[in-house]
Figure 1 (cartoon, rainbow over the protein chains, first blue to last red):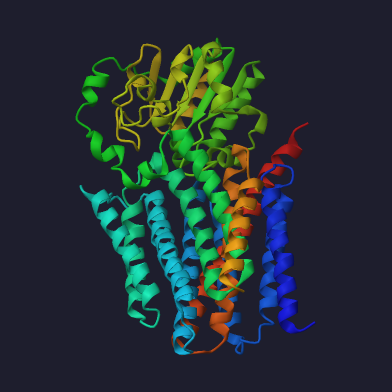
Figure 2: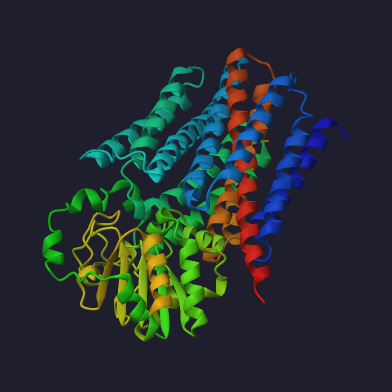
Length: 461
Length: 96
């Protein structure tokens, strides 16, 4: 076998490993093995690529590989489970960024060797655009998730977005028809970077899981189009697989919010349109505040308790305190379940990861479809740091910005205890009539401390 | 590879991906995302060729940065997915 043959066979085996790996990741029992297969496929692909005769200097490669491995490993090992959405966003961005750089480098090389044709140019242009959007989009998502970026755009941003998108598409055409001119590609990259920023900067928290899933799909598509630039089948296959899986996740998230991808990306966020001035109409003096002792007394006589976690649980790092509360409630013979909305938190599956970290058994976690029919027979529902996903306005008020979004029907349970720092609106920026409902009690305070207080009060009741 | 073969691969792989990943339980949404994200770091192999071929200073530099970014994506992505999945598995073992 010649060296190119060995590389091709290696790539084929790697592609099979990626397929089996992704398949494995879809089932709980096979997921660890699936991840391992994916990693093996990657290792194999890197090793056979080293045989490529185009590679003549290995020193720079070794340095970059070592730096990347150390940084990647440190990030992966150090990250707290509560910060997982940020890290996933960041990794996404790095993948997209790498694809752009590879496409540019190959395209420039092709121009200099006089090999640049329209086909190559289209592939390079597509990669430049998608990869650049993925890069800045992910970086902005990272800062938004860290809450270190407060700016959420300006009025008329959706229009600007459409204009920049059209300009970018025109630039793709320019790159394609003038493949020998480098400048168009650079302008296109710049436009893509801007588009990534203005597409994600206004995204509210409830839309964040959709955006993270979509960026995941984009990073795959960028890798795939890079494959067209490099004429590399493994990149095309692996990238498409990731693109497809990201698309499925995006679809699941969109369905859970009753919003289409276009609405998420191209419409004004609810926060921007709703305005915050009408809160007093919703709440009036009907909001009842409660204490940890009172909640403990309610729990004492309850048979079935459902806990509904939201992003606030992650912020307060309350997952371990919640586990302790669950353990003590179960010890006194009560049924405790968790109701998880598909878009609770800031990325798909966020709450599952957090509760798993606190060693809360999978059998305690109920999806929206499973938990909703059971609220009517639930004595106490405790909502911790969730807001929009339990807002009955989505069900009752057709004019609400979140109208039609499937929610957890917590208001059907005997008593709803909402643990929250204040009455401030959730990421959708709208008031929640649940807080003023007759069977709702507000327990103001930090999520973790409130849960600890309730558990302590339970002991003394 | 002709464009038509490349397009064929692309379309078939998309369909394969859509078939592979249906009905993923919510518990695996995050690991699936971070694991597949690590796979998208496959762009690393393109970056290796760009960085190692010593064509011009510009392409080598672009390649060098790309290798670094893609390696962070790949190594970090697989490791963090493994960390999450170990957490899920560990929880099950402790149950009687």
